[in-house]
Picture 1 (spheres, rainbow, N blue to C red):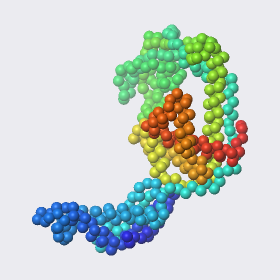
Picture 2: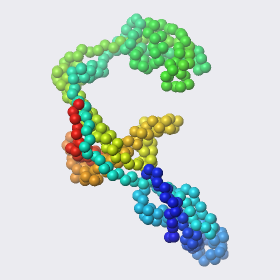
Picture 3: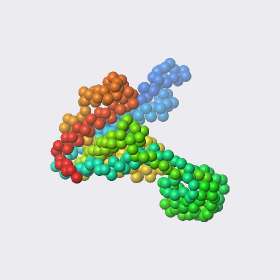
Picture 4: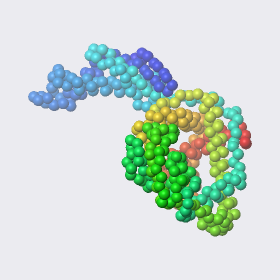
Length: 414
């Protein structure tokens, strides 16, 4: 194919190439297309494939033209990618196609390419590991949380106060959206479930009481249209319940699990918190190391990879169409960093031969099977069905990469 690349533009991971295919090549492609079409079509009065070429060209001019164009573009894509040594990560697409009789076929080819990740500096950094110490206050806070989960709510008289569970009926009685219809709500006062001004009205009442008053919606109310507006609100307090906490003793420990004493529960809580703190400290070290590496080694990332990640998170978080643009703007930097992080880890794993092997994956699955009391084959089949094999492979590779990095960088204990 007589083809020329007349202009080359690069912007980050994007490539734009101006391509020209000679008029002679275009004419030859149309002749071949006409021959193919002639063999496929049926024209009254002629046997299949025996119609005169001029009749075929006249009746099927547009089909011949389009088939020739499709063939030329497909072959041009492949030839340009090979001659320009491009490794596209997205399907190339054409813009500004010019395809006139007797003229060269010209277009601009757009694609994104795999970035060149040199990573010239990945050693010699100094990062701090946060303390993973668990103090008595943290243990007590977790015990209080567990105790709170076993609390009982009992009816109470008098005015409610912060922390009480109330049953109220609220109605908007004045304003453009007034309905006068009361709706019942169950609210924990002080938990931010209703605006502060309405909480204040509730705490003026005793069970069975009613109050009606103008309430101004706060300036930071989630619904922008309601911010700062005043509404007449009627509040009826139906019931007040107060939390009754169980004693923090051996009986509660037995109720919470397989613990004979409160001390046994306390020990387990401390160990769990310590394990969590250690994982958090490890994650902080990894994040700090990756921040240093990414700051010291600039490279481009394909915009389409960032977009795909944003779309995946938007779907996971069930972001509506109306909020998608704002979500993409807010989450975009985080998504780009994650793409950069994954590319850097992949580059290090490839360069230092740290990627997980099939034997590594099999060993990990055997370990999981032993913990679950299952056969490795069953676990493998379940993981493969749920698409988690790749996650295991990626996890093993990341463990190796960060272990390798920590050996070559300084991690100071906070």
